[in-house]
Amino acid sequence: MSGPTKKASSGPAGVSEWISKACRFAIDRNDFRRNLLVNLGLFAAGVWVARNLSDFDLMTPQPLA
Image (cartoon, rainbow, N blue to C red):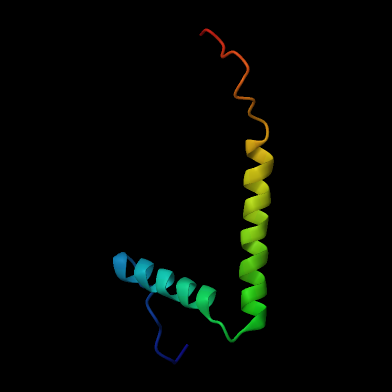
């Protein structure tokens, strides 16, 4: 290991850099594969939410305790 080592960034700078990279990844209009990946992820999240929320029946009486 003769080359310089990179330190892992931590704290708010690392988090903000990760968020900015994620946003840049999500809004890049010129990359079809990225848009496809983001859209499939959003679709999968929507399906997951819809399946989990469909178990609630709001008209049933609630348990007493």
